[in-house]
Length: 247
Image (cartoon, rainbow, N blue to C red):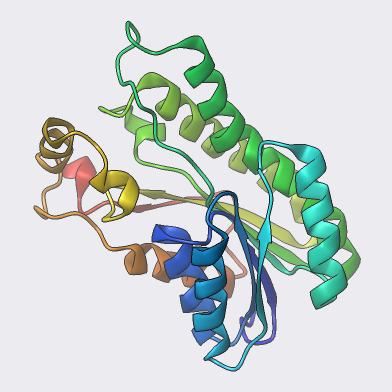
């Protein structure tokens, strides 16, 4: 799919990986809808920066775990832009607790609701509009934790593993509509979420990366560009992890 002129929704697009993806696609000429939940100012700053590339860009508030809010957001985006060609499911949260002995039940629920159900909600709301346009690209941001577990907690790992399983299933179902569904599984990336982890957790994570550094959000964005441009890839998980599996 040619990126220039396409309409993209990036969830969780006000910072970190989402921001990098939004700006990278704007640089390629895509029009950008930026979803956010809490920080309107940051989202609008990303939209302003995206518009410097000569494209349309606007921020939209919605809690992705709330299907009604997601539906309302999608309708607003379609009214403003005329449709949606590409969905990047990036919105997600990091736990406060990491051991099964410490995790409150409500934290488990919230992680699953945002990280996993949020992806389902956005896909369910967007797919009918992609079908009307005759094609679409869905890219889900998962995590190395979804394939290997890790130190961030079983609820986070479960939510990201669920995204990968959903990707495989939907890729088969959506093929007849000319919609590809893929996932990206980043390793540890330099974002605010990583910065807020306890120092001992960050050291333990970094010790598993053969390259010896955290990845950059822009490196994940490049994988997004590849998956949009390559029409012969669907039902795949692209690893962006600095050689994590070589450990």
